[in-house]
Length: 395
Image (cartoon, rainbow, N blue to C red; front, side):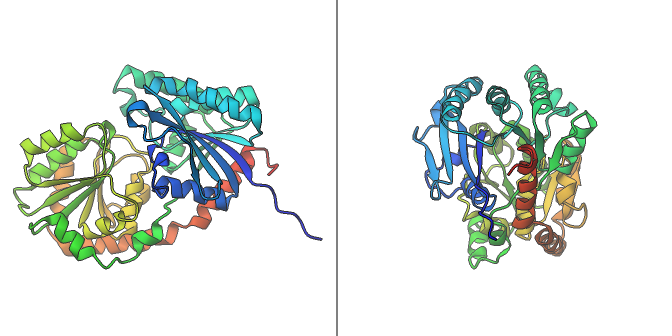
């Protein structure tokens, strides 16, 4: 007797990932969602925040053979996103059934997801991919964060299950009363590409060093406040006297681009190269060409850059945000220093760059360790269990 295959899950996502609207249809975010759809299996509709000034197209983006559909939710200001997302989602949910609603974070998309979950009686899966809820450092920044914290807690309280990408964040949420929390490592879709040797590393390195002898330092992050890039630049400026050939390359873009460029022009002119956003297929060679990757964030859950860097065989110097020590073994695959401590960051940076052989050993160790634990099969199996739980084990 043969059993017919179970129908794919129908998942309605609400999120804020701008790379889902990439016209190339091959951004890392798009590849990941398509992989989710094929492996679960699932039909996924994503209502995605797009600011008016950043809109490239108001037409939906269809991935694969229609397994994933991304619908832009275009608004002039982020505060209008929840209401418009609710309107768009309501029209969709009135036309066809969905098994669950998933939100990328418990704040903006969380508010929309909570309303829709209650109205249409659909289980809510809440993602927490940053270390903000209940984090005293984040709460002290401003009043808006305190309000967001209250909103986020209410969303999480009503969720059928909470998904995190960091054991540290999972532990924090459980310590403040949330029990239905599941840690699932972030899926690195290009893990094989990152760990495979590319033939043009030397040429990429020469281009990035631009005539300098090195070491070549790399930052891969959004140019936003929580990344604390001014501290990173200050620490870098302090070590350039001992490391006159050092060059810092920054891959990424964001709202602070012009402000940071001005700071560099005054602090370390001619020693920082801005690459902007790098296509997914080009980033492995840049990781592999670097001697050391830097991350100075104030708040992270499990920063993907840490895993990507180690997969590429490059060690990391990072601040001690949630999840950092789950990836970086201090003294073995990199260094972990206190958040916001420019003295400690600069000291560690100077020490690490004194011996390139030590950096190479750290990179090799980190790569071996990371390749042993990052597998697509493990992540997808955990996701299937999570979604099955959310819909009551009926799928």
